[in-house]
Length: 416
Image (cartoon, rainbow, N blue to C red; front, side, top):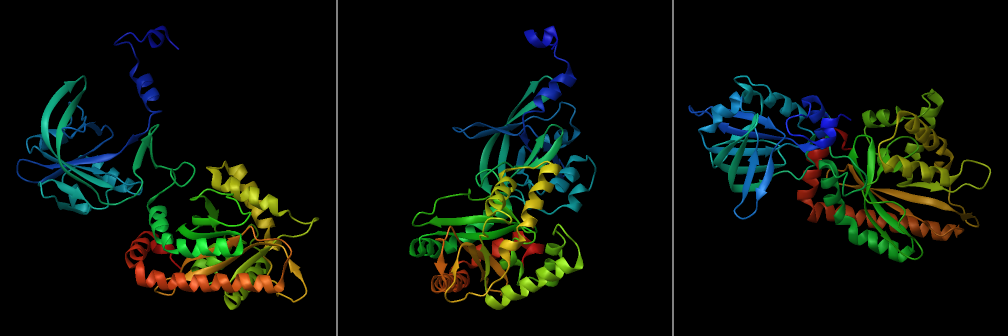
């Protein structure tokens, strides 16, 4: 560290060092829009938008003093601050280029205050110019808020250390992207049924929902008897063989093929084995995992691997190791006939919940089940699971139409 960096003497900080240090602080990304003197739409990307005051409601953004875009919109006096979502990077790039006609390539509509409101933004803040304050090589543009609304409850686009990305840390509270938010809203319809299952069978009951084309998440859970929380809501479960059979079994061939493509082995006989298991799951109406005796793969190793996968970003080496453990757990998921006179140590029983269009929307899971269950008890668990799934299906159609439609809109290509 140089002496000037240590003492903090004004005017002595190297610009490159300034950018490097400030780059360790993430900023949100917004597009400020307005109109030119002739009424043409104009907009600029800013990473300096911030709230200033609650009473009166004031916000600000800070364009460069040399910004030609701000010069074009300044006299209009009315702006719309569009908070970009994590999946709007291409829109950000489009709006960052100062060229004529760029609004022809984006979806927008004029706000009640005259400035363009961009489609798909997390929020729109409509404001009018209060004053402009010079501040070094930037301007502080202070604005009075006239109206504002969250128009899409998704996670925002962030700028960090010279790159763009989304908000992706651990747990539900931090990893809630647009798909996860809609999935949790949808899964909440199943909460009463899940709580009843946990209470009745003294176990863990949970709802799994797809949040993208390769992961499920636990969106609702409840616990009865001696069962205790073992994972956070929002933790991800990889959709790769052998995991996700109850979700994939009713999928179209394209989705099944993608799932098989994530298996650790691509040998034809391995794929055929999983296809047979999917067929059996469809016939039975559920999937089941069994805790194997000592000597084979350990169920605790699978639990630890799934916890590590869900815990955060993995290095390539750790991800390969985790996936190898998951793949080696295939024996736990071998289908078996429930035979009178035998006892069973089950890891979980999972069944599908169908949406109004007949696709698999949710999966119900019973876990932490009492060990040494006889055939009668196992059949009772399966029957309860199927009955609850049927009730939830009816509730989705009768009471959750809006949530289901919103979730369909976010899932798009991976809805099965």
